[in-house]
Image (cartoon, rainbow, N blue to C red):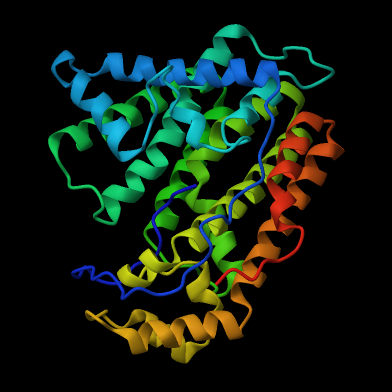
Length: 338
């Protein structure tokens, strides 16, 4: 889940010299979707198409091309924006709807609003990230996409919460947690503190799952969903940090790897990079290897996913639990992939 990482003042990002990095094959395990889950992903993709249609007609083509190029969204043979999002990032809604021995617990109109709001929340995560860190310039198109997605998400959430003060308060609380967290670094500068901080940074993605769970089966069920989905989000973020280590070194972004480094090496990480800065890169990579940091983060990914699966088993969300265990399989043994 791509959310802004803590980053020093803006500077020219200089690519590091060619260095060994984390093996690009480090990834989640493959999830074999059920037929119903695959159909639900199609429904989520239709929400994205509805989003494109809601834009001014003159921007439709540019918006589609943007998604194809920047987010690598496949349009042929079928549009599949959420192919690049691991379940249960989007399938959590499907599993909540099918909770309690497969019965659909929510009215169809609420399910539609939930899909709209959650699709927009997932779209906004990387968009906000890339606008914030400078990967995307603040063009009219990019700002239009951001503002329109936020408007659609907020309108759907207002409809879900209408007439129920407790729901409205929940929505406001999660949105406030999101903006509070993205404007500040982790309170505790450790790997665990980083994970706790990120749980707040993904707060907009938690709104719909928690709101739906509370409506469907009460507070205890909602707490289990929040715990499991939050743990999955942390695991996804840690994986992203492993895969993006070289880029984060170049930009100075404070990733999970940064918070595992000794203080002296953190100073090297924070030092503005220079071209052909072999000494800086070698010092960081040596500390990563000697400190077993890849193994530590890999073990943390597995722990978060297994704990999430256990939380789902405890509330009979076996389909989602199995997806989480599938994601964890490559991390059964901490790899040495530097």
